Length: 363
Image (cartoon, rainbow, N blue to C red; front, side, top):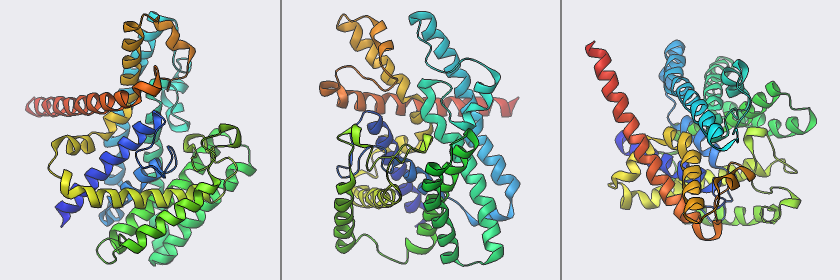
């Protein structure tokens, strides 16, 4: 059962990263759920699903593991994208990022993670690190006050719901922005923990009644959707990195929950058919590398398409980092190529790391 759960979680991670990449291409893999409406909440949820009670007894080991798995590769990528950004600047005259400085290299990653545009999706990594450390300590404190799952769920729910109005009432300084994101995200980490420990094996939440209930609720939420008309706000979508919830107060929380349910349901339906497809297994194992490299791959695809169509690469500098060439015809080509290239790049990097680790152990 543990192996099955692990494999399903791996497929859920694969779906989550595909949702992120498709979102950056401005289309949705799950029709009723717009890009940016729940994808990052899903990643926090997965982290909660994988959280173990043993970490309560070994805080130092937990922090050490998170530093090794999240921050060390983050700053290696930060160094790599510093080089890539400088190289592109020398070739095109466009610097995709903030000025090079000690603050932007070491501090900005923990504030907004947008020091280098091509690596900006990695802002989530440092946010995940801070959120998981906060989750561990808050959870320990809550258990000391009252070791009751509904008390814990209520506390994290209140934190999440309070985050949105706080982001509207107070000026969002860099530190307050981090705090708001942590408050919002902690709920979804605990929701993942709650699902794994109290729901998954005890309650069936994927019945036909649940299906129609979620579809009905999401249909009602569409009444608030304005994603098709940016002048009226982003509707069901929200931009967590900047705590942009526009005119909504509760909708971002609800659509995150329904989106997470839809993702779990999708995996439950598709897992028997795709469980032996190695590509999806590999994708789920290298989501970090896909998150890190997909904008660079899109940039290179765009440069190639501009070249073969006789358009100077300088045209790329006139648009933001998410711009792609002729999206009406090319969006899905971008998606497929990006998922394939970044997945196998990640697989290659993991193999390289294994070889280096083996070499270092021998020496």
